[in-house]
Length: 172
Image 1: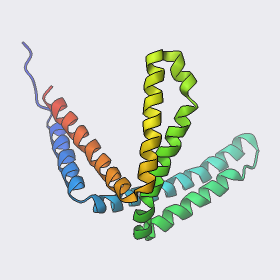
Image 2: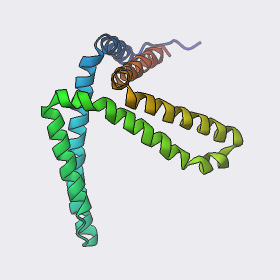
Image 3: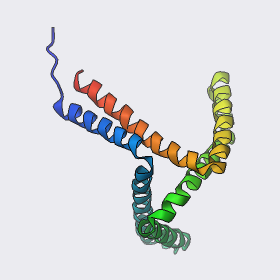
């Protein structure tokens, strides 16, 4: 019989993630500010990466592409604007989330042929999930408060599941 050892790092990480999830559930509006800050920083980093990528593309191919410059500058400006205007970021985040949900679900309709190639059951599952995604996206778009709270709870739920997973892993 093998002796089980406790992975203390995973246990501590799991407990910290569960505590973070509980705070997320307690203060969904405060959590939105954190999400806006992360979103803004990621937009700035993405813009910087696009500038770097554009220069590498120019070095490798000799082609001067201007689209990466435009998208890079747009990402940096949007990221900086949201970073220094958190109230506006919190206000528009629910609309961004709902629009993203809608676009992703609508694009899912164009991949139904791929689902059909897997199996008929997978095709119907994809159709149902995609239609539900479109309905949910429309509901979130027309009810931004619900969208904001949903986003905050989804982040909290993710932290909770990840924390529980780490605790289970700690006692494997």
